[in-house]
Length: 288
Image (cartoon, rainbow, N blue to C red; front, top):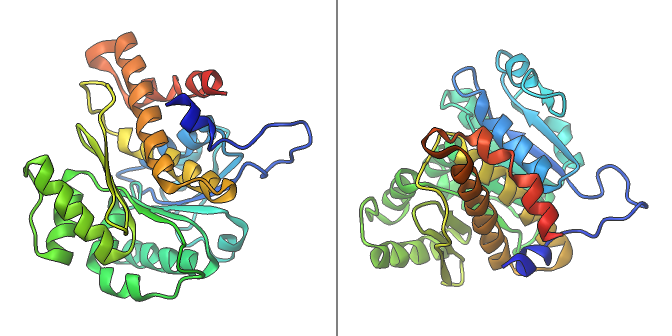
């Protein structure tokens, strides 16, 4: 598995400049959920992306900025002209669901598609996507193969499947969920990474893969945000190296589950997302 993760990684050398390993933009965060974009941001940095810009509400910006000096935080949700300077977008962690946030989420997804940037849609970004899915899948894309990954949990998957296919998924057996995931990815022409006890990845061509490596029996808040930052970085690197998108899902599931496993061994029942993050750098070092 480590070899498959390694196939995604950009080669490090003293000739690299800041930004060569990627610039990630995150649209998310609100006063209620200021931690979410931080977890995504710091996880992406520890995996190895060079720069992360967080675009958030004015009231949430100083809170998020105080979490770490590594964070670049803009006190406005709309990336605006910054979009052209970023390599990949993550839309949704902690965003909130007020009217302006939903509009910015949709506009950011559309603009990223127009510019040809890979996109990951998570959390409240998925809520906005679900409400406007027909319009979004019809929006112009820079090219037909532009990679987009939706990362729903069980509740978000059910909401999306009901809206698009009029099919319930919550609490359904894995074989039924697998069938719905395949149909949904094909209908949306997008990739779907479904987070759960067994991670599931469906692609528009009907392929569905399951990842059930041992993780942790704890599900602390923020773990999905960590996954969002990690999968966005792997998605970017895969496009640069010409690596199959299936390896993005495989690598993401492996890294998140392994660092969660290690964190649980260390801390047990009291494990938090912050505990998980402390293990990312060491795991990536061992893979290199």
